[in-house]
Each structure stands twice: as structure tokens, then as C-alpha cells.
Length: 201
Image (cartoon, rainbow, N blue to C red; front, side):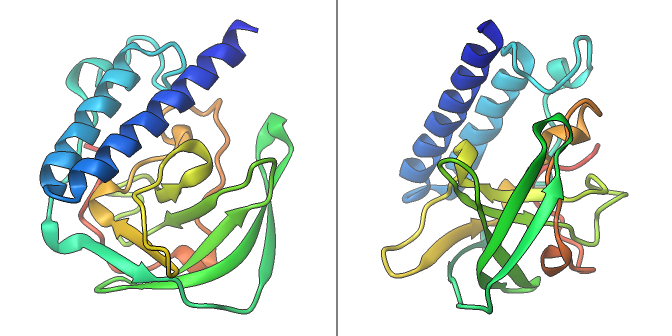
């Protein structure tokens, strides 16, 4: 039972962190990003559900990021697409089914599919595997949004999403192979390097 309660607390804290980010980013996106980094570093260093193994130096140094670039923050229209489904294996958790619900055109990056996690509660999922994968960032890619777990930068009432490439972050499987994560499908891959967000070193 303790593990479930710890995981619930982790998700609650992540959701609270993103809620603060959405509020502050309305006036000062760079300051919101700094708060996000600080909040993530605290969670990764101290929380019992941290994906970092005990003794990992990142618990002390903090997670590395590229310098914040305000030109990489967008509010993008979600464009309708032909529906598609994708089922991914997620280890002991079984499988995760993704339903493609739209697409965003990210300036300087290209088209990225927007997915719905077809599980209890659901949520929007926007992964990215860019040209830095395997060198500057995790080879499996990063996440821009995962609203089922609280990673939500906001959007408008008329079908828009805030996509800020500075908030790209590594999935838990980057830190510990015990974690199995859904990674970027073909429609979320680009050879364009995105030097923003979390990096390897």
C-alpha cells in the first residue's frame, strides 16, 4: 500500500508543479521554467518515488538542461487527422493503447502527432524524438506533454495547446531500466535537433 500512496503523492506534486507553471508562465515563461526545474530537482532528489537510483549523482547536481529560449514557446492549433491506434508494450503493466487525435505544426521542428492515452482517466500525450536523441538527449526521446500524469502546459478553449520545447523532459526509463515507458512513434520523430529542455549532460 505504501508504494501506491507514494506514487499518488508523486503525481499530485507533479500536477501542482505544472499548475504553478501555467499560472506564472502567463506573465514570465522564463521564471516559470526556472520554478519547474527547481521543483523537478527537489522531487528527483528527495521523493521516495524518484526514478533516480539511490546514490545517483543527479540527486545532488540536479538535472541538466539547455538554456531557456523564449522563442521556443508556442500556442498551437491541434489539426484534425485520420484516426489511428497504436498499442505499445509497457513491461509488467501490460500494454498502453494510444489513439491519434490530432497533429500540431511546431515552427522549426515540423509536424507532431497528438495522442490520447486510452486508459482509465486518459490524457493527452505528446512525445518527441529529435535530432539530439542518442547524443544530447535520451535515445528513446522525450515528452512534451503527458496530461495523465500532470504534465500539462495549458491551452485555449478552441483547440489549442501550449507547446514549449524548453519543457521537454526525459521519461523515467532514461534513468533506470526497471521503468518501461511509451516512446515516440513515427509521427513524433524528426531529424531536426531540438536543443531545448532536458539534456543528457
